[in-house]
Amino acid sequence: MKLKQPEKVIVYDTTLRDGTQREGISLSCEDKLRIAEKIDRLGIDFIEGGWPGSNPKDVAFFQRASRIDWQHAELTAFGSTRRAERPAEIDPNMRALLESGVRVCTIFGKSSVMHVREVLRTTLDENLRMIEDSVRYLRDHGRRVIYDAEHFFDGYALDPVYALRTLRAAADGGAECLVLCDTNGGALPWTIEGVVEEVTRITSTPLGIHAHDDGGLAVANSLAAVRGGCVQVQGTINGYGERCGNANLCAVLPNLAFKLNRGGLDDTQLQRLCEVAHEVADVANIAPDDHMAYVGRSAFAHKGGVHVSAMRRRPDSYQHIDPERVGNQTRVVVSELSGKSNLRSAAESLGVALEDDMEGAALAQLKQEEARGYAFETAEASVAMLLKRREKGYRALFRVVRYAVHVTSGEDHDAKADAAVVVAIGENHLTREATACGPIEALDRALRMALEPSYPRLRDLELSDYKVRILDAQNGTKAVTRVVLKMSMGEQMWSTVGASSNIIEASCRALVDGIEHGLGLGEPTEASTASAATLSDRTPERQRAS
Figure 1 (tube, one colour):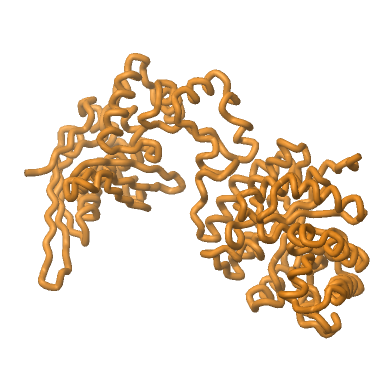
Figure 2: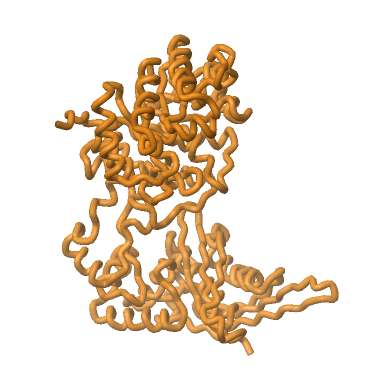
């Protein structure tokens, strides 16, 4: 009979140690402190700060961290057992752990006979002494100790008797938790659960799980271990880690809370999960995975018309939880797969009053534009403008009458671009010219020169990203080009799209959508109110200057 499981699982974060072993991540001491503070505010129980004996950066981290008043988490230092045939009191790793100043140390030791004999190249008995001596030495110096049983599941498969003896050695030394590690990430959930159940029968010391994602099962394995009897779960924010990563706490934590009723965080803390996931990604300089469970931008995004229609009647018809429980939100994606429900939802979220008799025409236009190369699902501002231009009483803030762009190159191949635009604001037609390194920059400058006197807020608009994709490369230089722009004004950000066989025309369409959308986000100026009233409600026409 399985023992009664406690309600709360202890959460141990190793983003700052195991997470930094991911390719592409290199955190400064300041970065590590910023991430630690964010994880601490989330409500995590333990934060593993690093390996103080491995590099000067981690030594500096622990020195600075000792001066911080942590709100929730207990800071831990990581290290190995003493070396073979060397007393713990003269082992440099043991000394570094003590000098880190933390109250909790996590040390790892070998569980696999193969690793003991062929990696450590020592005897099985000496390995047991190394484990027990190291734990007892730290305990004798007033430290709490968590023991990570490295390669435990692989070692258990090779020789279960010896693998269990390593756990007994750590428990005899005084470890407060025995963490079973799927170090190579190759175990299956039913194996994990079964082995954990076996281990609970031979020890009263609390168990933990440390899973890697090499088989894509780190989250499932962590949950299986909890079902088997583990009371501590180790992992990293966003699943960062060596090779394929560690168990992703951004999935483990909500699954524990909502699926197993064993939450390590309370409801208020979980509502910050999405925010923390993105903050950590930002500090680590890793683009967030939009499709990550629970916290990804697309985790609750709906594109199929049938799905959206059902969700308008019953929100949980195509969502397994309310996204607000993890600080995320439902998004309706508009594309060629959309139905009228998608458009209604998009119009409502954008505050556009789209009449019923306009929905069909707007949907037909959207699908026609996508057939020509547009992709609206990542360009919410272009969707907003497509709908807004069909809104009754719509008046364009400006209209590009024509433009011309000329690129010249000297003998030194130092090209420059000149752009001229004619822009209509009300009944006034303004002509402006600008020069820049490239044609799109020149066009953008000319547009701003024409518009800024009437719309001063345009000075705050920034073009933060410019992406180009060739859609039908087999057509060579006649290929359709899709341009996606990202713009921002203060804390507000949006994206637009343009498509044409002429890259400058595609860019112009995306620029005009982005500028008009951005200007519409704030309070209209007197100039914009006066001029907008004199403009027609037709979709802005753009043509190249001859």
